[in-house]
Amino acid sequence: MERDTTPERKLATRLQLAVLAMLAVLVASCGAPARGPASQGASSIDLPTRTLAAASGAVFGLAWLKDGSLVFVQDPNVAGSGTVAPYQTLRLDPKTGGVQRVAVQPDVRCVQSQFQTPSALPDGRIALSEDCELSRTKAIPDRHRIVGVDSIAGHQQVLVDNLPFLPQESSWNPVGDRAVTSDFELSLCPALVWLGANGVEQHAIITRDSNRDWRLDEPKPGTRGSDCQGLARAQLPRWSPDGKVIAVVASPPSPKDGMARINDPWDLYTVAVGTLVPSRKVTGLLHPAGLAWSPDSQKLAFSARLAGLDGTWIYDLRGGKPRRISRLILQWLVWSPDGHNLAGLVDKGASPGAPINNQLMIIDLSGVLGS
Image (cartoon, rainbow, N blue to C red; front, side, top):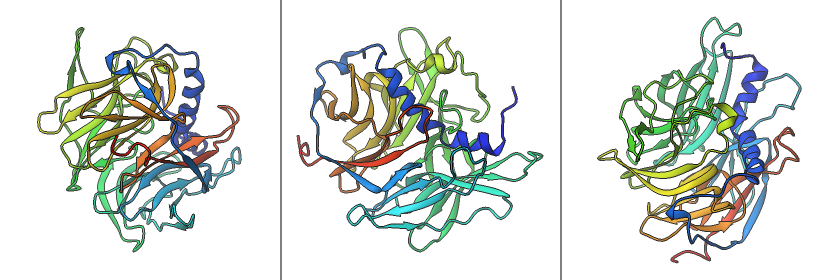
């Protein structure tokens, strides 16, 4: 089936992850309970949380930079208007609430260009995925790339060019020369994708269970289409700050397809970079919406339903069970550089079909630091 690439459809695709995340939370209320040993005995506590009103409405994507600022993307388009204006990349000071626009430089060949899915680069810059429309008639396929942007000086550098798919947020190793990501447009059937300076790289990550072997990565990104029947899924890949491990949530192959898979459980894996051997850490996650490393590479925060409870959790890789620190499901979860806070977006929309109304929330971790 040919993919609908009208401007209206493309705008809907850009916001697809946020809409599906909200829908997943609603569907989860009647989902199956979590399974697996790491789900048993999970503890729960509600930590202090504050809302930053400066980032609300049709906002998506989130990065927490080394200088303490938060970067997100805002969609200025009015729902149903039929127009597709460029998204705005914004930089927020969480202490003052001040917001500044980040200057971006579209590819000069684009008739329409959208920058989105910000992530923090190890050197303090922002990585942004650029979706470039080269032809209104689609005579030439869209061009996808990732650029690095200095949010203060405005300097911009192409990090990866000529990608055959539109990436989600990219997560980079400490050197900044390799990254992991997944396909943005296939949010129901994503897979881990390796990136280097020359584009997509091939490094097989094979997980073994009692029934079969299957891959967490996608050797040919951009080719799956909308039918993911029989395919494994992997999303939210995150490279640890020390560069040694990649965390990812994954779900094994299934005979089901599309929305029929929305209630299938996911497991949290860590993959040693040196061996590419995955290790399953937490099982039975429903509708995972965020994953983030602590700055010391010892803890993982994630948002999902686990053991029958919706919320945001912290899992210590040195041992113990996941601990729920908030009832909130946070999309685009990020950990502050000083390790003291977690931030993410919560959709306050009245219903799955309502316009996106995300709000930026920050969780104070001081109550659990060192515990």
